[in-house]
Length: 461
Image (tube, rainbow, N blue to C red; front, top):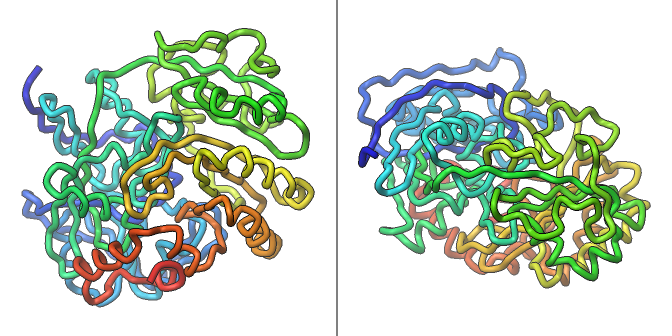
């Protein structure tokens, strides 16, 4: 193999995106262009994917080079980066201008000796993964949806699943961004250690990302098996064994009965645990057909199940890359608790089943390994994530969330930064011991507060 291969790709296997990159990442550009476009105030109102939020910004800048990004930052006193708009709260909103780097979506460098790939900030997993697989490589983890941007997933500590798998930013070994002074910045895990750990989950508040470098590994194939009606009693008695039954395990539940609706077990070929694929798993029954997480929904868009072998990027997500998910009226919340508190948290949430019933579509429960990122919900602790897909009724939800959050308070519950939550700033300050250091990092890279918005003021500043 060649030591290094430099590439450009404009492939767009998947054109839809479901998670806002919020920011890109990047160093000084070698190209000389500075092309940029700006969506004027008279243009159609911009909303997030779910349509529950209309952005307040008058203008959206869409530079297609890093020099143009630098110019936008230089020319604006206040700015916020906007990506594919899948965040459900106002983390990417601003009353000033927004900037998007989605047009910058190419592979920049494949280093086969170092086992890394460097990409531009606008690239999605749907673009990157098939490209890597064709060349014999993989990344360690993916989220449920492959349509999200790599940069946005990392900015918000989006996570994927697996008892031994770190979240998506745990694949990053270097990041490049333009700071509030329009200066190029480069940070790497090897050279910058603690500062890198503080910057990778940056919540859009250090600058505009233009590149990320990810560690890669040899490609691998997987199987997926789906079971129905896991008894809750079995789950509570064997929680860690069940969540460790595969490389990645997801539980889907509506909390309305004494069974968990579905168990999705994703296993590497050659590493399938004994009993996975059998007709029964801890009292749950193996499906004899392909299913959607919401059972009465068509399963055509879901990744292959029933033990059919396929490449990692066609099994780790729940949904196929070639299906572009349409926007839909929903809200999402997600809460993380340390692994030792998971069973108790499950019981607490189930106690809210009557209040959840009118608004819940489905919940997903996943494991995420610990990391060292200051603003990650999994900072220095293995976690279980409880995700909620909800009907778009904010008036109902904003009354329910404080009740659930309050009941989980003593279990050290932390929120997903891009979803709906009401945990107050004083409590967040208690939960994130490195928050003072993160604030210092913001002052270092953005001393004039160019990227500070109402979300950051409300929750973290």
